[in-house]
Length: 309
Image 1 (tube, rainbow, N blue to C red):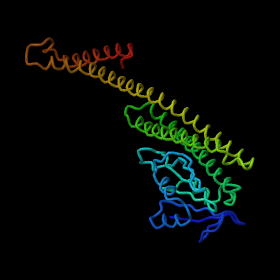
Image 2: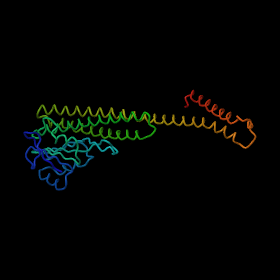
Image 3: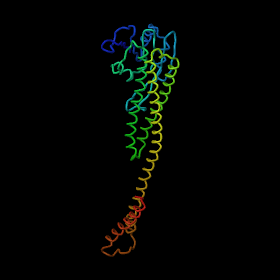
Image 4: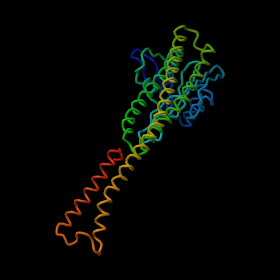
């Protein structure tokens, strides 16, 4: 799917045809759309590289065109094995257009198309790219906060848990943090290369904005590392807690089994078809019941004092 946008008097507007200074957003293009992009002087490899969801972040140049591949975050469905993942997004800077290419849509591009980014202009192409990268770093931070909130809820459930369901849920978020760490470090190397090449050094504001992007990305890396370390320690600790909870339950059940076995043992002895003490006494049954209950209560009291029940 291809959509064309350009900044006008009322903000970002959708166009029907390509004009100079427009933004072309490409999501999972068909072969015909890929051919159409090639007619706009976009190199074929610049189109194919971002369509690989596992493509690493990097910068390439060819015939005056610049390709910036960034790893962007994406939220999956609640039933997915990994709640948050990353995928590749390409930004192609030609002599007249800005082209974004991605295998799947993401919230970063959606926020741009909805006009939620202030001071966005497709005519200022370098500034547009930096805004896109800044929004990417901000989205990482937003998803990290969601992960932290979800982990806090699971932490409350884990304290009394006897099953592995909550630990498996934490493992899913651990996978997301691994994806985030790899993608953010890859993005950092890509942006540092842009800084070394002085691609955005023509205007001081662009250079300052690139510094802001690097700072936001570094903050996201640090938050990811902290969350990953906390989550790893938490999973180890709660694995022990689940084991201890299970041991406590098994200890209680074993103690209750012993307590309940004593009356059964007495009843079994007095149920034998042999000569037994007190068998001719009319109150023998009541005495047996009281003795059984008293013996069970005595053993239960001993177990409670020793914290076995």
